Length: 374
Image (cartoon, rainbow, N blue to C red; front, top):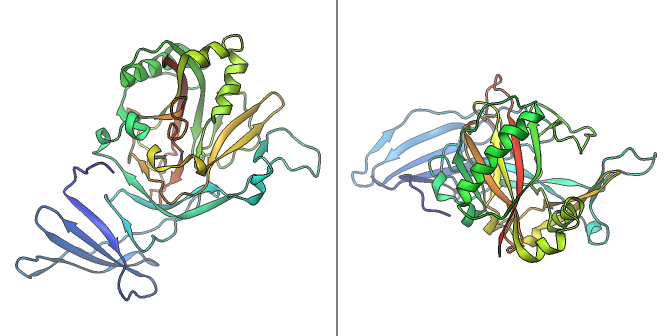
């Protein structure tokens, strides 16, 4: 993990003889050597005892009572937020302990391909064999104030300041004329490389106020759909090869032989501040290719191949709190020179605490396939 610029690091420590629902919170202030002890009852999430111990003087100082309330108004597609595990680092008040949703690693998938069919099927035929599960509580670390310590090259993602021109997001012509060229310039500046070829791969708009997908028109990129709470990667290597064959059939062999190919997503909020549902991205170095399962998404014209993730204890997730529409996240989907660590599993998670009048998150994501010399 990058070195923190913050002056304090709290840790949740297991009480040697805890009550049925208590965990001792111990905070160490690195600059003035203060220890702050809290005991929380996780049913009420209310502070029962709190004091500051000054090791040099032995004095005890009382601090202000504080309460934490959990608001359970999650839509059904998101996991509920369980209590934290026995030992778990907390680096910021905006860090989140929550369950993320994963593809359940069924024995079925060893001999039958996971799939989802978007078409209407005859009675008695299942349109999917996908089953999901909520993972154990995981820390999602807020990197607000540390954005520069996480880079596209090292971690597979990067949060940056970016102020593209305003436009009518429901106007497809404006997207192609104004926004997509701006996204390309943003990527060019971030990569700082000579790109031989750019291909607009796809784009999607999302709205957290929508409760379910229904049966969307997968070919209509202007259709607004909900955020995806399942940890996933938007394309597998086989899926990208299929895309190349569909769209650049006459050139595909030459392009694959000649160029390094990378697929990037540029993800950006369309609301002033994201407060309800944030984007969690995984440090690509902490996730194994073995924990990704390829899934076929099928309609009457093509098969789209994505990855869905199964739970991994080693995976480290991050997000940017209170993300604004003047910020974006750029992350890798595919790298032909790094098939093991060249993608960033990610997904949406709903915050445990947010106001009732919060505007639902809206966002747009654009994917570019770029080709550079090997």
